[in-house]
Length: 303
Image 1 (cartoon, rainbow, N blue to C red):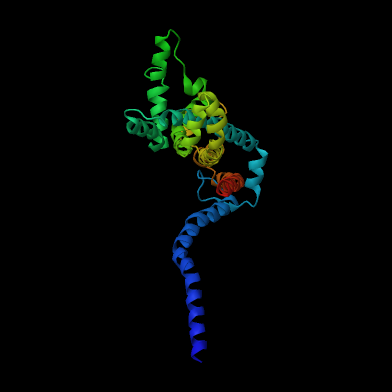
Image 2 (image 1 turned 30 degrees about the vertical axis):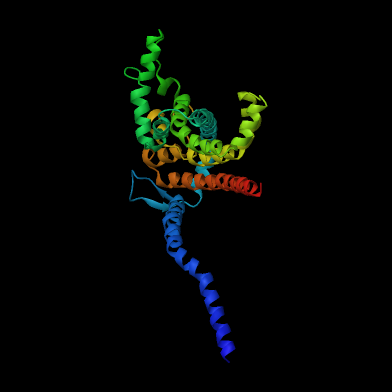
């Protein structure tokens, strides 16, 4: 009898041990679900309604008319192309600039910590503030720093936001996200085996050969992680487009298209439909990216 009670007590303790982590995580999980899924369900509800803010009292059930509008107007595909293009170019340029600074900061020199702090600063500035800084302090035709240098070189001033809006957004996003790439790549550079680098130096491999055949293969996983995380973040870029270009010059991304339908067109139903489609496309991209990211981690652990 005592043995049976003891076994039951041990079994209950094991069950309690298994359920305790779930109980501890339950409040955070419930809060996360409520914070993310309830607004999404409300968005789906609005996407099925015909509701224009110019006539807020006139609400009606529209069914799938808003979704039909999304796919028939022809605005969705250019927005997807703009989103993919800006994201791809910005990720690649940020990665290259970040790699350049990571290689420089991997060396010992006076003021190294100060230099790292200064280079990281752009990533810590709010996106809206960054867009305003670049629009007026850097790109402005009259007082911009870039046009000041251009005019000193004997050329005429350039209206960056109007003449080259696509390039302007890429430059700003590169400036903003290059520090993020640099941090990831710098951690990869600092994890290199110094013995291997010293052996390469003894064998007179040279700087470029050492970098191409030893450093770059070592950085492959870090580069993949930087690209995946950077892509997920840059897909949501909105502030540079809203503040600098207003969606002109092929910069009307999905995020700005949604904003335009909601706060310029005043059509809540159509904006909600665009939002639902955007969320679905983002989930697809994020799922593929995260699976690739987990494969990178798993392969790194197995090695």
